[in-house]
Length: 377
Image (cartoon, rainbow, N blue to C red; front, top):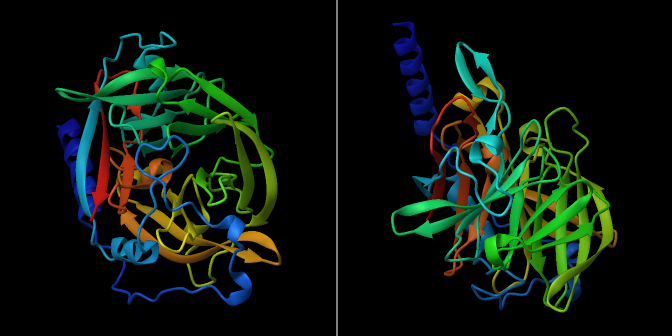
């Protein structure tokens, strides 16, 4: 009887979280950069990128308005899932989902949850392999790639990472990018079993997220945030120039770093970040960043996710991110843990898509599906 009561409690908590209202209605006020904050032409985004280009992503129309509309509840959220065989060994590392996804569990009101969890989840630019993500573990972490099949979405490949705790992931063209052990890893999604990697050393934190954008001059900009977590509030943004040689990532050069600053009347929750998504705007070439975090611990059952929109500007001849808007939405552990997995994709028709993913799996269970949510206009 106790088990039934607890199950009902969990369902009710998650239902409350899913039905909770967004922020009170706010008028849309467009933020305009002052003349001395406008970036030089060398930091304008390439807005001619097409779906399928190998080294860039599609631009979004009117980023500020789309983000504002999301914050006012105009997204339609759907629940989705992808499947895997719990004890099957997957290419290319002969790893089983149980060994990578499963982790020791802890108790909360007799409810067991995974200690480690999905670190990031993204929509890729590939039609065959539309989703990918990373997973932390107590021993060996992993990167997973999801394929499209006749019967639905399924695990395509499972990669062991060198560290137990890789960063979240982001997409640049055909590349799945993540950080670990002082390096950025560029995984070629078009290679067999997504096995081809390029590794570049990086001098800057990425535990709070990383994102990339192609510039109009043909170079690339990498923006990272760190550290992640809640304990250290001295968060920083790091900016790097990424060079390609022979069509592949070749070198990273640090441009500058800065402390994260938010408006004084915002909740400190918006200072936090576990993932960031870098977005180019059609027409203007302006660059925006969305940092995402959320409540943790017991509040995974009924807490909130915190999405912060910033615009890339110039400050004292250095790059800076100006926080201009925020979006707070309910989250839960079963299909939408914004804290660890919130990201944004831009569709072929230049619209923002919002993603969040299930928190983690209990290795003592045999569940063969991972769940996620998608928010679209």
